[in-house]
Image (cartoon, rainbow, N blue to C red; front, side, top):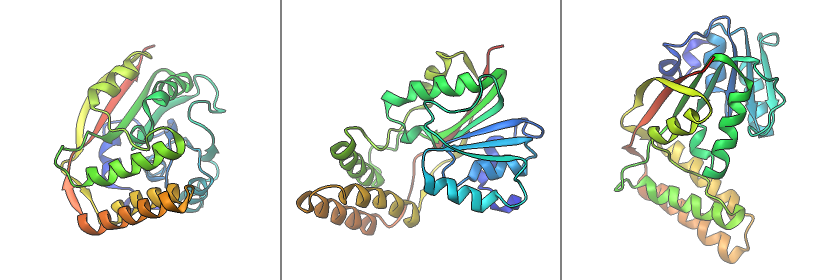
Length: 242
């Protein structure tokens, strides 16, 4: 694993944080972008927590070699992890909160607080509400509609920074800094297709009469949008009360 494999947004978000020698948690590991950044930054140990077996396998394959003594990939629900209380120095949540519905956000915040040592740190990186006229909103709305039909909850929720700051403040966290990571956000064809794939997965769970039109609409939107540069990705750094 090289520093070159770490996205610039991760590097920027961690630039002013103490990583070397710290016990870290990547909450919502995804494909391991922040896990890679934490390991490259000299973390003593990184817990990469994800509730998806596929993502867990990707993280192990991507950064597992040579890091067996510093990496633990944990398959768990972020509302209730097996990590010990007060065991982590630094928590990161990179692109996590936008896939947490409001009903789960507070429970996840409570769990991240539980595992963090007093005076520990938290970095939350996420996407602001896209501009009203953004074309990508149509694809995100379709994704949410499909999720609502199948799961009874949205797939995406874009929280303003002030909302996330308030949620974590309720659990004893204080914002130390806010910075912009991307403005505008480059929604590439690959990004849009990933959102369309979520729609296709939900569509497969529905009767053909509902699922096929949803999947077709997703394909049409990806084709029509192509790519778009719009919106903002921000980073909030918090410190936990002692």
